[in-house]
Amino acid sequence: MTEFEDVSGVGRPARQALAENGYPNLESLHGANYQDLLAMHGIGKRGLERLQAALVAQGLSLSGNIPEPSPSKNQWIIGHTGVQDKDIKTHAGSDDDLQAYLSTLEGRRVDHAALLLEIFARATGDAPRLWGPSMIGYGEAHYKYATGREGDTFRVGFSPRKAKLSLYGIQESPRWDELSTQLGKHTTGASCVYVNKPEDIDLEVLEVLIRESWEHGPNDC
Image 1 (tube, helix red, strand yellow):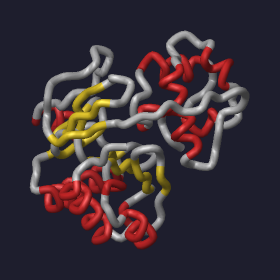
Image 2 (cartoon, rainbow, N blue to C red; image 1 turned 90 degrees about the vertical axis):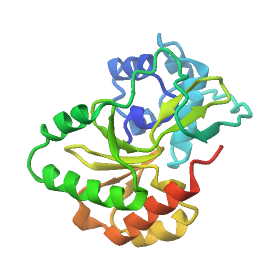
Image 3 (tube, rainbow, N blue to C red; image 1 turned 45 degrees about the horizontal axis):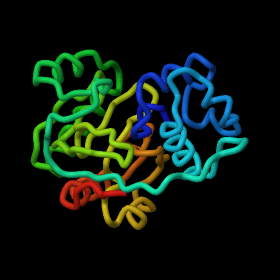
C-alpha cells in the first residue's frame, strides 16, 4: 500500500483529513467521490489532482465529476536551497539523529538497514542523513511544482519500516523499465519501491539502479 507521505505534494493537513475520514492510504481512495473529498477541511484541488494522478498510475481512480488536470511542469535541481513552504516539516537531521534512529530498529530490520547503508554508500559515494522520522537519504535536491509549492529533499534513499522496506529515487534510472523486471519481488508506489526483505531482490540490480539514478539526477515532470 502507498502511504500518503509517499505522494509528492500532498501536505500534512490533507493527509490528516484523509486519515480522520477513514482513508489510511492512497489505494483506499479508489472509488471515493471527488466532491466529497474536496469538501473536507485541509484538502484542495491541487492535492486531489496529485492523488488522482497517483491513483491513475496504478490503474485506479476517484469517482464523480473529476476535473481535467491542469497543465504543469514540475522542476527539480540538484542541491540544497533552503527555500521551502512553511508547512513542510521534513528536514535533514544530524549524524546523531541518524544513529539515534538506527538504535530504535528491531529484529531483522537492524541487519537490513546495515546492508542497505553499505549498498547506497557504494552506489552514491555520499554519506547518509536522516530525513524526517524514518527516511535515510543521500544527497539533496530542490523541487518546485507548477503550483508554486517547493522544498528540499534527498535524491535517493530508503526507510527500513517494519512492514516493508521503502526505496526512494531508484525509478529515476533511465533503464528502470528494463531493470525493474530483473530486480525481483517488489511493488511500486507513487514515488518509491517497496520490498519485503533484501533476500527477495537482486542486490546487484538494486545497486545499479541506485547508481544510475544518482548519476542521472531527478527529472522534471
